Length: 226
Image (cartoon, rainbow, N blue to C red):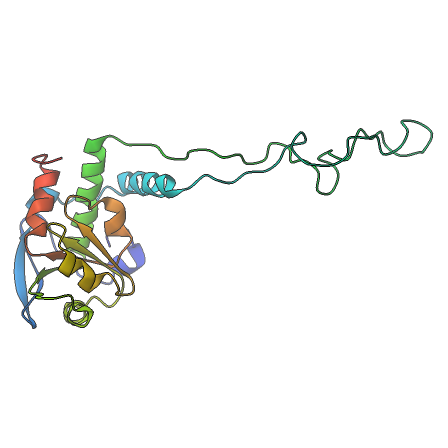
């Protein structure tokens, strides 16, 4: 990944200005394929990626945290002792935030953390994320030939492509057979080309495009599709 400086520095940087050769798997054999990286550009916009990841993470938050205020805790409202003559500080009731199990002052309340970014910015973030992956040699392609769901075949394909860590498998469209083949693999996330975003790319070590998923993603980045 282009944003991991410690690891990125140990790999030879491949330019994404033109065609880039990546590993490809088809019918049990490993070969090579050429991906056009020109539409991605050469510059990885780290600041934009950070903002995009923050947005995606914020949109995942449930925001169901809640605390009780002084008026919501269920204690007696009687005065614990008289106002004067005891030597103690003045005390109103047992709901006071100063007492154990009392109300909470300015505590968290249920809220919605989600927010949005311009579609053009999200496309640019995805473009930068893919450019970094392609530059670091962490992109692969796969020709699907699953007659029936097979996790064993899917695992062998990813292993042959060198996906030793987490992987994001991008399908050209929703295919139940392909989805069932990859869904149970540890550290593997399956998504469609129309749903791929910068967070999916950056959250995984490798990105594997099935069939013509790469071309469909480039069409999205060009604004040809929504």
